[in-house]
Length: 160
Image: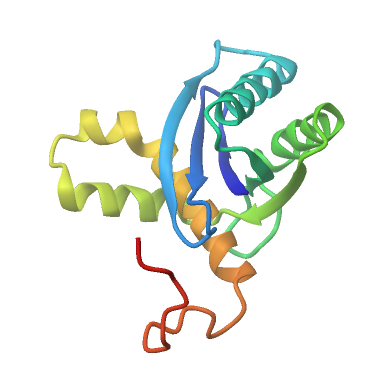
């Protein structure tokens, strides 16, 4: 089962998805919220993505939502908004919803995108989904037991 990463914002929601082995995260899409949009509509947008992934044969069993904090770890203005969104999301789906520290995720995503794309307009359009991928990758890396990616070990895969 895959994990889905969420970068919740006032205007946009970045969405990322892991591979089936839960090793790598990749940006999926950016969902547009109506200005001043309510949280229940935001929850429905995320549920629609989950339903689409399920129909496509890529079901998710974990939602990883970035929790905004100040650099010192204290809550910021966005923290209560995300916590309310997560509470409503948990009430709306049986899928596990976990919080992941998102400090500096947008900055990291921006610097990664800038390496490949010089046009800031194109980067901006992809930034939220890229930030969701950074959040999700941080979660996947922390979830994986140390040493579980031993590339020198013999492979247990069967030849096709």
